Image 1 (cartoon, rainbow, N blue to C red):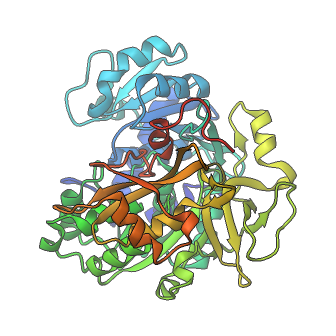
Image 2: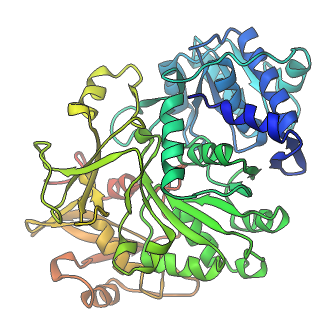
Length: 513
C-alpha cells in the first residue's frame, strides 16, 4: 500500500477539485500534486534520499500537508516536531532521528540558530512560512521554481513513512516508526468500521504534528475530502472557518470541544453544517459531551481510542452508541483489522469486567521505536502492543478505559481511577474543566485531589465539591482536596499533562505504590 495512491486517483478522476484551503490560498488537486512533486525534487537535491529523514517544525498549513505527501512521494521519512517543545527537546529529536533537512515556518524561525548549533547532521533549513525568508534559510518558493516535478518514487508497504515522537512522559521521547502499510491499513480499517470522514470539507485545527490529525488527514485523502486548515486551535477562528468554508467534518480533542462549547461567542456562529466530529486523544466527560451536542446540533460524534504506536486508532465508539448512557462511557469496540484484549501482569487475558492492561495486535501496530530495541521488545512482547492503559471489557467487546496504569491512585489500599472521578466532578455546574490526581497523604498514602477550572463568575470550595460527588461515587473515591486554576496544562495534542500537576505535590518518584 502507498500513501500517494489516493493522490494519483484524485488527479486521474477530479484534478480541479479543491484539495486544500488555507486562509485565502486555495489549491486544487492538480496544483497540489505539482507542489508535492517539486518539493520531493527539492528534498532529493538537498541530500534527503529514500529512507533518509527530514523534519518539519511548523504550525498547521497547506505546506504542512504538502510536506507529508512529499515524504511519501520521494520515499523519504518525515519527522514532525512538537510545536510545544522547547529547543532542547526538539534538538534531541533532530539528533536522534539524524534529520538532514528542517522545514520551518515564521512561528519557529527564531529557533533555527540554536537548532543548527546543536544538530550536526542538519545541513539545510527551508523556510515554508509566508513572511520574508530569514537569514541562513532557503526560501521554499525559489526552490520550487528551480526544480522540475519529480516522479513518484513508488515507496510503500513496509517502507518507513514517518518517525513520530511521543511526549516523553518518562525519560527521553521515543520515536515511533510507522510505515505506509501501518497508516493505510489503519485508515481503511477505521473507515470500514464507520464512515468517520465524509467527502466534504475536513477541518484541521488539531496540531498536524500529532498523529491524531495525521490520521484524520489520511482518512480525508482516502475518501476525497477537501482539507480546511487553520494555523492552530482558537475558538473564534475555528468557528469562523467552519462558517466561511462550509466545514462538514472535524477532528477535535476534548479540551478543544470543551472550549468551543463554553466560549461566549460560539453561539454567534452557524455551526449547523458540521455533520461528523471525531474526538479522541484523551477522555471526555459526559458533561462536556452533553454541552457539545447542544452546540453542534447537526453533528454525529465518534470517539476514537488509540495511540501513536497503533497508527493510531484501536477502537471506535459510533454515533448511535453515544445515546446509550452505559456505552457512551466506553471507548467503543475494536476496528475491523485489530485484535484488542485486556490482560493481567502476566499477559493472561482477564475475565470480562476485570480491569487489566489494554494490548493490541494487528498490521496497524508500529514497526518499533527508533534506535530503541530494548524498549521496542518490551512494548511488543508476545506480538502485542502494550498500551499502558488500564481498562475492562464487557461481554460485547466494549472497552471501558479507567486510567493510565501509572495514573491510578492508591488511597488506603483501594484503587481509584481518576477518569471515573473526573466524570463526576465535571457534572458540577460550576466546573468548566477538571483533572484528578493523587497527592501525598500522611494517613492514606495518597488522597484524591481535584484540579478545576471554573465557569465564568462561578465559585466552588473543596467541601462543596466533595459533597456533590458523594451522591455519585463511593466514599473512598471522593476528592478530599481541590484547587482552582485558570487553565490546565495541556500538551501540543491537547492532552492534560497530569505529570505537571503532580510535580507540584510530589518530590522524587510519582507516588507511593
